[in-house]
Image (tube, rainbow, N blue to C red; front, side, top):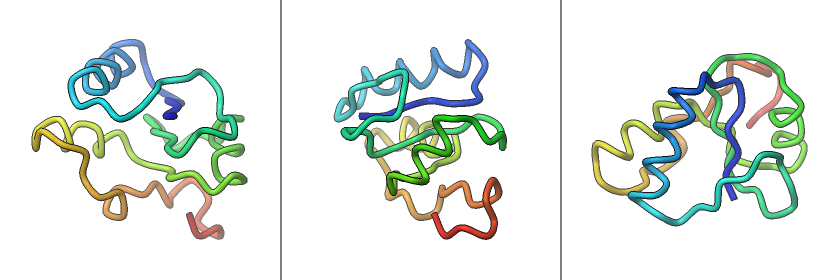
Length: 91
């Protein structure tokens, strides 16, 4: 599953439309044992972000979703990792 955090309503709607278009993810409200990706709008340390880091999820910038939309398929995550939030922690 995929979780969004620190995003405005319009940004959330964009992510939801991309998920519907590209498929492959179930959008959920909170990080759980099925979550693989946390997409962040801003560099804020939210509970979902902390839980995502603790569970080893991909912590990604919103650009990953936008660029994937432009390419028509989900892109490799490495270039979009959000490492600014916890610079001491390898995410």
